[in-house]
Image (cartoon, rainbow, N blue to C red; front, top):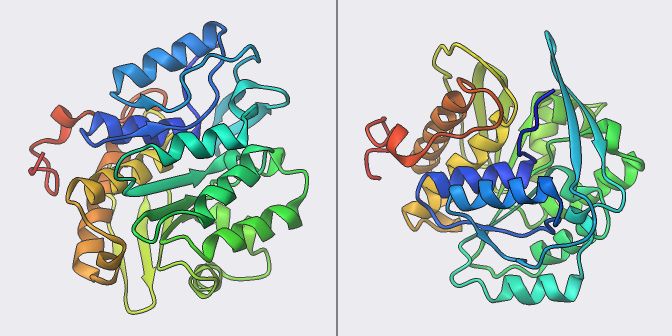
Length: 292
């Protein structure tokens, strides 16, 4: 048994911070021993903690079992620090973040209250200048109301600019549709761009005006935990690091560059044990990252 700091939003924030872009982590953090690990991990990755006051509730835990078919997750969520948030305080804290170029929401933040409703509020109230990135990263074992969960994802897609989904996510969200039909449904619901991952297979990108795939280079995989989060974090670091806007999502060449760079970050993450995204120094000479 090994304790590893993780969780979708935290992994994304650490990826962004390690790559030298500005990242703020919005979540409750416990005053227990695991909470101290979380704080150290965020500090080490140059991530700002938006809600610095420690909470008495215990740290949220996910027990991961690695197997031939990928990781299996069991969650301990009830009355834990990550989800014990005061909505008004969170909204006020987020409003103070200067130049909020992008907002990410995903994983358990879409289904555990009050964070789920709070996250939806933040997305719907986001400035028109803010890029919204959604990663459902579905965890069926933690979903108590599948129809309500799917309805929330649909509502969020109406404002989301980029939606990253795996083929497993598409199968859960749209059980009666093919992968392509599910991806197009997300575009129909309002998203501007959909990124579909399928493990080591090429990554698909769909937009109302273009479609393409990005190859994944052969990789000696050590651990796939956090691979999708590293991809999202890599995309955001690539995008915000170039001061790109929502409007640039209509440029196929630009989106292709961002996704290719993000795939490389995810690939490097898979070469390490645990969710451990690469640092700026690890990719400074890689194609697409030589601007760092």
